Length: 163
Image (cartoon, rainbow, N blue to C red):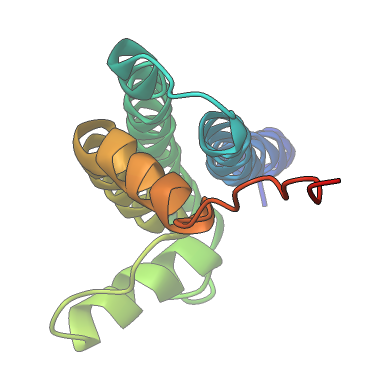
């Protein structure tokens, strides 16, 4: 076995797992940031300007673009790791190796095996849709919630008894 190829495989596999971990972090930070911003908008006592409801939209868009870039890098690394596996295992069994296993598993399933990075992309798309919905109707929903929470009847102050 080629020691250089084996060490290269280890390094690239570590890099690929690092990229996958970054997609988890992006997903977590995006959801947290949106939750904080919308909690603040909903907890305001007075009405928030409608422009503030659009403010969170760039967050999931940026997260989607970053996740897309990481997914692309993971695919490049996976492709090269597959070639390394075929070279490392060529004498024993060319069908050995994790990337080879994933390739075979995707071939057997109609829709393929979803990568975690791909699921992160869809999570970001869902957050973009949610942010668009909240940007459009959030102000109305917040106002409706405030009007339901406010008392509808007013109590007149008690009059002092006449002497």
